[in-house]
Image 1 (spheres, rainbow, N blue to C red):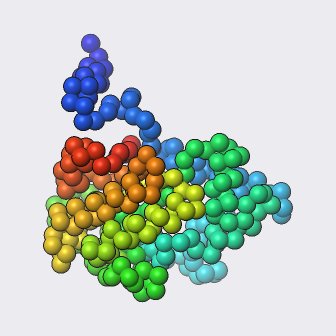
Image 2 (cartoon, rainbow, N blue to C red):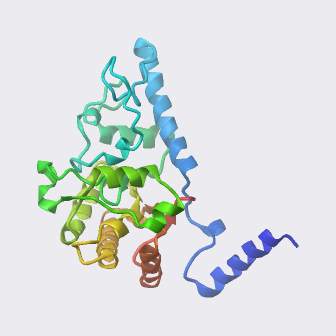
Length: 273
């Protein structure tokens, strides 16, 4: 007998017996980075097609951050220090230059659904807004009492594997939202996303919360407050509790997931990592 098939069938039997989780074959939806990037690629191709029809292909400047003629800094961790400055889209996405039936982000979402038959559009955001958290000096986010915090990795974590993302966050700091304000932040954020046609969210880098609990009552308390606020905002603003959790396998979150399943507060879909 194939041992892998034995394990797979055993998990199916356990799922039917426990009724607290579904086997991967019975999931309502599934998410992988491949699927996410296929959708992203489709949007890019649509954009390229429109650009080509007008003036030929535009120069790709997506990864060109340095000034013309300036020597590349070679710092690969700086990108993980980027911070959210507003819950609304920036000016690049408010006035889209297109010959199609859209000129704003909500119109673009509607275009994707009507032209290509997409049923759901998910928006990515980190558990703290962006990889580097939120921008403490942003006027749009001051009501959430953000503060710059510098996470410190444990010697055991560093000895296990060096992660360029975590190294960047440790070096440049993270804009952390006060746990007492996090429910309000998620509620405002998801309410706005829903109003422009977004159907759900993929919430990334969730395990970073365990590194920033000092001064906020500890990592366990902070994780509980963040995840509770996230659950409530998702269930309030998105039908079917459309939430995809990513980078969420730290111990504090795993214990929390058991409570979620028994309370039936939300449906969790995991990126295949």
